[in-house]
Length: 116
Image (tube, rainbow, N blue to C red; front, side, top):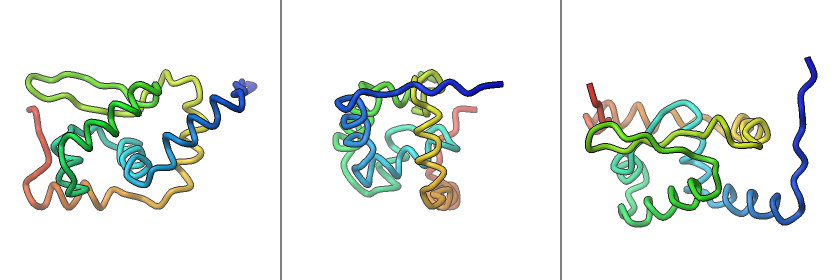
C-alpha cells in the first residue's frame, strides 16, 4: 500500500510551523497525541490563565489540527484525525519527548476531568 503525501505550499507550511512552534501549543499537541483534554486540565498543567489556554486551542482548532467534542458541560480537545497533514504532524510529535507525566500528575492530584 502506497502512502499518499500531500505537499504544502510554502505559505501553508510556514503557517503550520508557526502554529506548532509555540512551546505551549507544541506541548498541548504532544499531550493530545495520547489523551483528550479540556481547557481546565491545560490550565492546571501549564499554570497559565484560562483565556490564554483558550486562545492557544482556538488557534489549533482554526488551523484544523485539533477537534473538540462536547460531553455535558465539558469540551474535550484532541488531535483531528482528518487533518490533511496528520501524518506529518504525528512524525513531528513522535520526535518530541513524552508528556504523559503531565496527565499522571493531574490524575494524582485529583484534577483529571472524568465525565463518567
